[in-house]
Structure formats: structure tokens, C-alpha cells
Length: 532
Image (cartoon, rainbow, N blue to C red; front, top):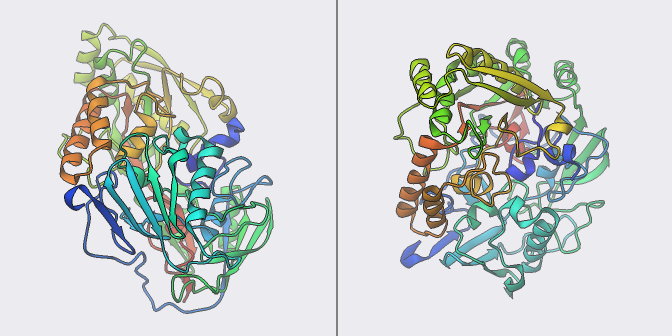
């Protein structure tokens, strides 16, 4: 069960979100061309090769309707920016699109924007594609881009979405298709933010009760908690797409109900296939599993500003207690891969040269003894906020015992977990979805980050991070990010033991969706889907 505000983290939104439970280039210049790869995006390098977003196994055929089983509820809305009531994410991805986007391999590309340029890191220019229309026939313009940015920041808060550097008062329309952004400080992560999931462009005066976007499908009808119906957008700007005539998204919050609907032929696609049902789906010739390796991680988290975790030796010992392969085998039924206590593995600035940390009970004992904590006892606060996350906590409890460490589980209801005490637990769990390094670090490690659960405030790391955010040069920025990651690896407060896969299921005749490192169901990419 995914939970939490995936939208704020740019991730998989098949289940209740955090807000639900809370109720709330050359010569220093970067140029991004239409259809090309974004440069300087959290370390992503420029490329002269444009690759397809999908690699279908058959020639696309036009026609037909696909029915999708997705989680949801009676408070669902089709609004990419306002997360309470809950956004119906699968539907949102059919209706709306962003200025830029990550493809299935996490390569950032231009989308509704044909170009983004920065002569320096605190002044950015966005130019939208010519002739792209919303579903109501209105042409996308600079006014819509400005309205969208204001709406995102006003509804969510600049810190929550990482737009704290944007100076809305100085944002300027240069012509009908061009916007100039002036920042309060240099910030190369603007590019990554424009490619964020759900930072999608909406028209001036957007009404979520009558949602229109630029996406491959337009809304026909919606009964919250039951069904959404979509029809092909005949004026879609990507020539030839979509291939399907329409989509139906059925609200099936319970995972068992989704599996039964797939097995019975009521739906042709579901997200969040339970691990225990993978073999059942694979054994059915009319079905297939869509599994995606991702960068989402489910860390054990400690506050580095409270005892005993303020002692770096105790934090290092906790990381050495974890048998990462066992956590994946038992907690994820093998659907994941080992991580090394740093995040954003698909960022091209990911530091692969750091020594892989593995379980070492003797070293853990030695570190704890040196810190005066050889009989350490601590409370691990957990909650059912993600599939199998409580099971993962229980696995760590057993692993810790082998080193004489006693971890006592305190399991809270998700509403309580994300209540007033959230972000204050000395030892807890969490989950983060796949993003570039600098954006994730800005939200979760920077001293003013909206989700700095570890209370990390390391001066050396902060200096390197601030310099990286202001650095346009790819190579220099990568060096700085590697330094940040080295510091994290040595003394951070996150035990990032693995990266969890997305596991979804499709009817065998649904083609055009490929594994996506950031989102389920091939990035919800039904604009690429077709029936064989």
C-alpha cells in the first residue's frame, strides 16, 4: 500500500497520500531544445541522441478501450496541484502534461516547452511549443505557464514543491509564448522541477470541477470513488497519438479486488500487484506482469540531533546491522535491489564509486561499544504507510538482535503517524520516490527542507550542496554532488538499504507500456498504449 504525499515527492500515487492522513550549456548558458535532452538537471548530462519514450513490441493499432483498476476514493478530484481532497492520479496523467518530463529511463526531456534557457543560474527563460491546445481549444500560452506556477506555489507552498527560489513578483511575460523567471538565488534544479510529476500546465482560470489539460485523453465523465471515463483527444499535439479510442478507470482501492477484476476480465490493467499474486498472473497466458526497477527507497530514519543517534558511530552501526539482501528477500519478496545509503540511482551524478556497505555485525558491535551503547535499546516507530513496511521493520528487529541491539516496535495508525509528532521521531521509517539528487536533497536533507526527517544540518554537506545548486557546469556540479554523497554515506541519518520495484499487471493484448523507473503502469503512459 503506497501512502503519503507521493505528489509532493513526485511518486506513485495509487493509495492514500500524506495530505489525506494529515488532511491538508556553452559560455555558462544552458539551452534545452524541443524533444531534446535537458542539460544540467540535477547532474543529468546533455545528449545529442533523442530516444523514443516507448519501444512497442508490435506495430501500434488504433482503436479500442482499456479499463484500468486503480485505487481511489469518494473524495477524488482531477487536479494535478491540489492534493486534498485526494487527486485521482491515474486520471490526472491522462489529462495533463508538464513543460518537461522524465522518460521511462529518467532522462529529462522537453514536453510542452520547446526550449528552456539559462544564461546564469538565477535567470531562466521558458518558451512553450507553438499551437498546442487544451481540450477546450484554447492555445497554451505564457499566461498559462505563469498561472500554473502561481497556482502550484500558492496551493502547496514554495518549500513543499521545491520552488522557494522562484520570485513570483518578478516573473515576467516576454511575449505570448515566453516567460522569464527571476530567482531569489541561483538554482539549477529549476529544470528538474519543471519535469516533476504533477507540476502540470493548466489554463488560466482552471476549474477542477471541469478539468481540461493538454493530455492524450479528455474527460467524459467522473463519479468519484467509482469510475472515470476518457475519450481520445483528437487534437493532441503528438501526431498519431493516442492509439486508443478511450479509457475507463475503475476505483478499486483493495488490492485483492483489483487482482480479481483483472483475472475476471473486468479490467485490462492494474497497479500495485501484490507480491503473492505475481506467480498467479505469470501462470495465466492471458495476462502479463509489468515490473519496473525504480529509485524509490524505504529508509530507516534517525534524528542526528538527539542521543544516541547524534553519535556518528551509532548511526554507522545501525547501517551495519542491516542485511540488505535479506530485507529485499523477506520484505519485498525479492522485488528490489540493494542500495548503498544514498539516493537517486538514476541521476547521472550518482556516486557509484563508494564502497558498498554490507552487514558487518562485529564492526557494528565494536562501534556501539566505543560509543558506550553496546546494549543499545531503542524504539522504532512504524506504520502501515507503504506495502510491507511494517514487515521490513520486523526483519530489522531480528537482524539487530544478532548484535545485541534491542529495537522495540511502536506501530501507529497512519493518521497518528503523520500527525503532530511526524518529523520528530528519533527512529522511524519512511518512503521516497525517484527524483534527481539535488531536488530530493533540497526537500529531505537541506536544513530548511520541508521533509528533513533526520534533522540533518551538516555544515560541510550544506556548503557543497549550496555550491552544487548554483553551478551550471555539469562536471563541476557532479564533483560537488559526489562530495555530498560521500558525506551522507559516511555520517548521514538514513539507512537506505534497497530500492523497491513497481509491480503491475496487464492483459496480454495491452501493448505500448514499458517499465518506468519513476511511476507505475509505464508512467501511466496510456497515450502510448494500444491493443494487439
